[in-house]
Length: 435
Image (cartoon, rainbow, N blue to C red; front, side, top):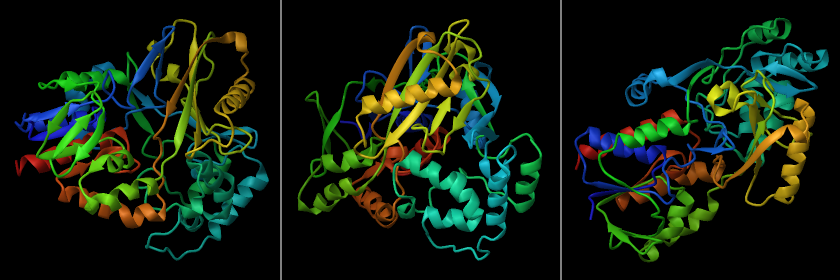
């Protein structure tokens, strides 16, 4: 028996273990269902190309996290990069973020965006409202129509009138009328937003720094241990391989909906199990291509709000680190989303995506050196109004049973790698005060 059991050796679980040890606490066990650690912060190498599980970039705005990266990974092993990202719409590229950079768009679109911003409602509603209404209040109807509404609908695969405004935080930059006007007549540098600057490992893909973190732990990591049942009365976890582990405190980082289904006790937790089906998230199909040509694009990534493109984003890992591709080659990743059930067969979705990508970037099938398709079952959490009203109660109820469900999927939220590390630290610091 371990006093503390951690489920999931993704970034949040690894951070929790790391910070428990930093606090002098080692009476814990860390379990991971896969054969390797990292969760979605993983990389795969195929035909000498390195692909991440979609775009993973390190944004380091927090001073502690900056020091953490320096201490655990070493800044000498990271490329420091200034963002070069764009939106493709109306047949042209505009710099990200859209709400500050209208230069190059058709005149009628620019006029629509500026006029809509100037006429937006001045009174700001501080209560929780829909993302749809929040966009109209902050950016106006033009920017909403030409970017936010179609893009957010595409990425979430969900009705944005039923999504709350509580997920944005630092992720959506604001703008002003002066910035809008200036950004429509001047092709200026675009350094606005939380992701204007980032770092990325020089070798090994995003997984490089996850492995460095895992290597810091003194305690072993028990891989191939998939939790299949959590007995609240006996306070033990049952794994698919037949093993069990008792606990005093359980730290969960696997998806919250899966945890709720696994809870075993009595009728008192039946409502928690029923809540699992109410927690919504989309799924993502991540297609990766290795291209036998240099300099396919100089961009880091591109957003696609228009429905003619099935993907919402395409990125180019060779511009994060040259080591991700063989000499004389380039690479790209693209992302398609759906909610619970695809509207068409996945093979057809992928075929449409690959055809559109080849046409957009002007390369032929014979230039594709390798393809890697990655399916991400849990991708973006849907911040619907049910979540807003019920999630705090669910997490609080779990804590009554000494279960702390944390991280992007454990706490059912939208967050970055930085926040995953900080979640682990916060939880470890909180627990070691009472252990």
